Structures are given as C-alpha cells and as structure tokens.
Image (cartoon, rainbow, N blue to C red; front, side, top):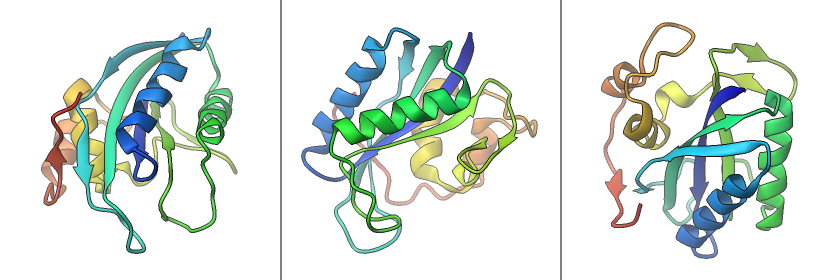
Length: 160
C-alpha cells in the first residue's frame, strides 16, 4: 500500500459541491482509503481572468500504482464534466497527485513530486493542514516549502 497526497480545486458549478463529490468518489473507490482532508481555501486563480478557486488537499492510502491513480483521478474529473480547453483556465474539478510515497518519477504522463507544488501556496497551505512535517524526496518539509511561499490572497473558508 502507498500513501499519496492529492490537491483538489474547483472554480465552476458550485466548487464546494464539486469537492464534496470528488471526495465521496475517492472514499468509495475500492482501492483507495481516504485518510485525511484539509480545510478548504478560497484562492485567486493563476492564468486567465476567472472566478476564484476553492482548494483542498487529501491524504490517501491506495493499492493503485501512480499512473493508475492518475487515471482514476482523471476519470473522476470527467464524471464531473471537466473540460480541458484553456491552459490554467476555469474548471469544474482539478485533481493532482502531489506526492506518492517517497517516489520520484518523471514520465510523459506524470511527474512526482508535483513539479510546481513548491511554488504554489494554494497547494501548500491545504497540504500543511494534514502533513506540515512531511518530508519530500528532496528532504524539505511541507512547512519549509510554505515558509518560502507567499500566502497572500488565500482565505480559509468556513467549510471543511
């Protein structure tokens, strides 16, 4: 069994409900156990002008291999009508694998740890809720990464 951390985000079609449905899909998957979920945060988007995002992070235990987990996450996105037209554009749901055990991987489909997580407070703030002292393969902790990242514009929502 592997421990994986994923980022969840949505800024279309009732983002809170989108995250609720995604978490339910993960919890109901026979090869995934949902271990922890962060608080939710409202964050400004990166990229073109669009609504703010609701972001969270989750810790999973899974028997799926990394690319099988990616396939599962993309299937959940599709079930929630994710359309990939604009890079960094608005979306009903975005699910990204941040970490998978202590694995370092770089394939055509998947890079682990997530290649830009260290510069994205909208990923690190929720992740720190559930794994602040987690060490990444490079030896840095989530807490250390977050200390070097601006948290401006990130607001905790009243919904966990």
